[in-house]
Amino acid sequence: MSDQAGGAVLIVTREAPPAVGPHPIRVAKLAKYLPEFGWRVTIVTVPESHAWAIDETHVDDMNRAHVIRIARLLASLVPPMDAATVRLAGEPQPQRTTEDRSLSRLKREAARLLIPDRDVLWALPAARAVRRLTSGFDVVLTTAPPFSTHLVGGWLALTRDRTPWIAEYRDNWTMNPLYRRHGIRASVERQLEAALVRRAAGIVVISNAAADEMLAAFPRAQGRVHVVANGFDPDDLPTPGARARAFEIVYTGSLDIRRDPRPLLVALGRLVTEDEEFGVDLRLRLIGNVAPWVHEAARRELGNERVISAGLLSHRDALAHAAKAAVLLVITTQRESGAAGMTSKLPEYLGLRRPVLMLAPPGPGRELVVRLHAGEAAEPDDVEGIRTAIVQLHHDWKTAQERIADQESLGRLTRRESARQMARVLDSARLRRHST
Image (cartoon, rainbow, N blue to C red; front, side):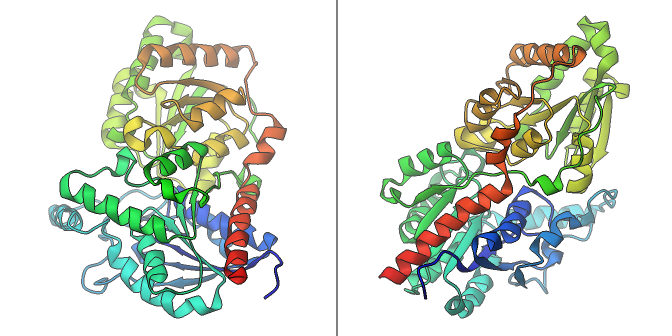
């Protein structure tokens, strides 16, 4: 094989379109853009029936990839998802019976016994399939979470297969508060991750902060950690709408106790009470998998007329609403992602060229918003800081002086650029393999 860039990559991922969420989108965009840099893509993933919700928006992005779908163990005996929880994006959720809820609780309790997570039941048959396939590929890329996906690459390395394995971390693992365990399980997972990191030919993370965190935990990974940031795809973005007629703050994604919006709601409620004009202008639109108590708290603080609950929409429809916003809201907390988190929605928000309200602990997301002068940032639990940021954004909106990212900066935040960075990692692994 020549030393030219490119080759064949096998991507192993539990999450891929038409499943809902940011992780399937990242996989879809690699499938779309890696061929521009010489890489032919094959994807090993789960059947569509394993998804908790369906969104067809990005299925076409994988047209140039060959997709192999492997069911998890026991799928024929115990369905991967309860019928009541599988729904199409944008459609109302089916009513769940007491029996459905009891079965879900039983499955959750049983899943807690599996290490590193319940998707080890998929990783085992996936590993067998990948072992049969590797002779036809230059590099294997496993992408997680769920972190059991990396067991596929670890097993491949353990069998001394010469195909290099790259482990992509869309979230860091044992050092991340979101996935932190306790007691014996924490020790087992830390040792498991250390063993996997030792065997990987390369490790991909999404931010410089995540790379620093990885190297602090695993110093022997020095020289093998690469940053491939998230981005946005200009092809996905609708034409920006006319200036919003209301001061509408739009949130897209999940909201629950880990991503707690109550400090924001308190700040907005105080402003509604203090400033009559602000109260007339304000609208809060919540799109996505938002816990019922969040909707109730929002209406209690702001009044029914100011809260719009849009439910779960397709990615395309969610972006259409976001393009018309006065302000786009990001909430990420220390509990959710620690200091290294970099939510994938932020590049899209910046690409939509709407002002951003970034509620996050110090880290790469806040730094990006501040550096690009693209909005306001505050700590997610600092009510007074959030209030000050909203007052400034409302003033900007009233005076038509909205701050948005400049086009030159946005060029470095695209999915094509992310694929270019990933292609360099794959090229390096392939060339090292053929030079040994």
